[in-house]
Length: 357
Image 1 (cartoon, rainbow, N blue to C red):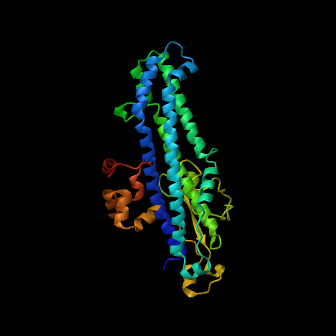
Image 2: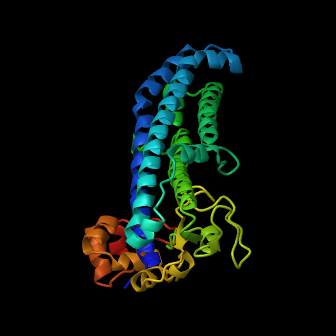
Image 3: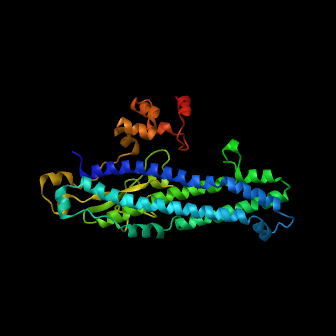
């Protein structure tokens, strides 16, 4: 029989898969907002460049680009509003999930004496908004991208005019080309930066919710363990912390010297790590019932890699994560999880997989 800690581990690994889907979907939604403004931005750029005279001072260029700069500003207002709505929804979802996960694995007799508490929405939101990420708040990172994007456009226009480029050439340099799916334009840099901020906002918000959820149930939670996603994309920063224990709330190292720093989901951009709450044993909780003691034995679950967890899932779940063809290859033991990635952590296409095989 699995212990409560082991059941909780399986639930949290599965939950991390669901969060990765949510993160991907949110990135798509935000980039869609950005891309939806491209036609208006292109038209405004053409009009602004054609109206430029010989005075290429910063103030003169800003006047000519005023419509472009306003469009850039309004686009980021819309992006921030969409991201705020997404993180608010995530907070509510995470609060319910963490409470439900604990309720599902802890024996009823324990819950009768020690009811599972829910984190407070206001506390989670305040924590998520106030916690710096890589030296800045997430909203400050987004504001910085907005400013840098406007400056990049302004500089490209000035440089293009000075170099004698045509309007079409300047616009193409800024927007990119259809042949390259616009990845060769100056604006691609801001797209990558926005994607990183969105992914980091999702992971940081989710971790803030679990922080408060676990702290609210400190009467039944002993401490937490860092839990990294163990695949070829996992950073060295997270690998060394995988399954290391830390105190609850204060997050001080237990039996080692590796610091918590910003914590899982926040220690670096697009971090996929999370944390596992370790439940107290039945004896520490004051219960002597045999069934309760067997479930709440206080034993830390054995280290489980993502690949091991995936191997235990149903065929439907494997196909959902990998795709039907990759799932079949996994079940036939023809390929392992690491084989689906190249040496840089990029998920290989089916064509690339066939070439490798």
